[in-house]
Image (cartoon, rainbow, N blue to C red):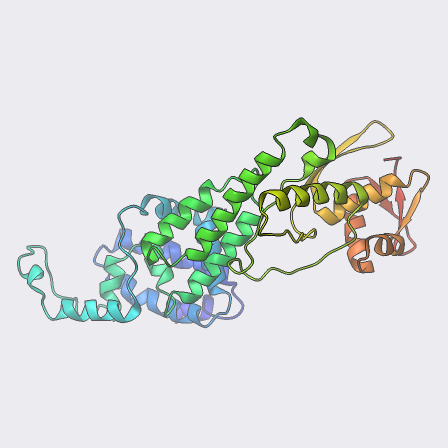
Length: 351
């Protein structure tokens, strides 16, 4: 009753319920090694989490994210990865538990065998034998939804990777393949292969001295669209210098991969910028390509002291609200100042 009134209701975020879920497993396994209490307490939480639409995403984020509340869980994920068998389906688990009740021969010769306690819950066998990660994944009736969420999370991590470093993603991918089967994460394998191919092409493109200057700013990530999760597409009018660099890489790619062509998604990715101001300041930021395009557009208009969102929207072929958001990014870094009249911004110093 206390669980339902304090935890299992719409007023509590899924993240908070998962924090309780993980901590209660660790705590009850310390104070009650028999697993009886855990078999009574945990199933109601599992049943409630199945009713929430964001549980899968929250579990994946807990396992693969950086939330300090799940640090012990991530340590267990890394340490328990080797030597595990593929995860059993729910039907197979139930059959295995029934076999235990039927007194399998290996239990006859086990001096530590004991009958199921009379006050144990229906999930007693799996509560005793499975680790915390298996208990989390076991919330779901099948693994398909979990694997799809895992693929989406992997794609997000890879799209934000720096210097094509995929060591952590690859390690986690290997661990989950040991739990779910070698072929279960085929899409994640292809995504990792895309990053590796991108790194090789990037190194080849920048090998010559002629790739200095604006060309050196382009470090693309190739996406095999049929294997990556659905990605929102968008575009804008890329400023001249960046467009020149993208065209140079596209020409290089066409020469080396004659059966393929690039289609740029300029709204994705990041740009490392050093903006030099007229007062001697240098503002170093990591921006989106659109925010970088706004800075280049403003910098190219040497005599302009006032910049309007309508002008930016027209020059970059984007909607006005997107232009306002991009301009306000530069306000937060003290490059622009927002004026009282809506949609107008003043350049603090010449860029």
